[in-house]
Amino acid sequence: MKLIVCVSCKDMVMLTASGIRTCACGMTAGRYLEDNITAVVTKGAVLVGIDNNSYKQALVNALSEQCQKWDQRVDFYFTGWVPNHPGEVVYKKTLKAVEKYKLPKKKYTNKSTTPTDSA
Image (cartoon, rainbow, N blue to C red; front, side):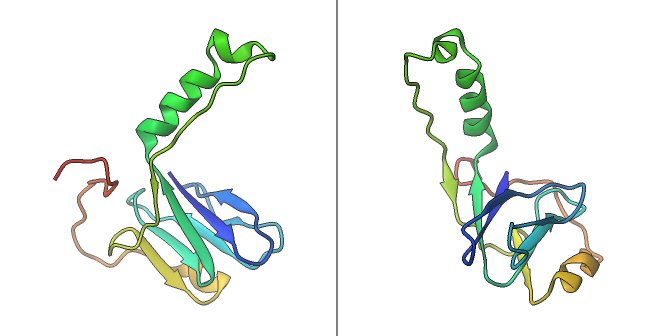
């Protein structure tokens, strides 16, 4: 999962494959590309990756009986990173450029580049 953080308004937005997501002030935006791995975002956005497996486990914990008791605190920890490898993120200057960007015509593998994946 990838999130963008706006340096201006500090809003954090989860990217989706269904369309462009924009922060509260409209200064940063982004979306997943067709490969569901690569994100295209506006310059100035801070992109944050969260490991899908640690996120899913946190959801399981959040829905557990222990967590549903309001008098108890349950902490969740995620494995995260700042994506910067080719194939993970493409930066564009404008929202219009983010909207129009398409993957180059070459073969892509559906390999995740999270730090917890083995090579």
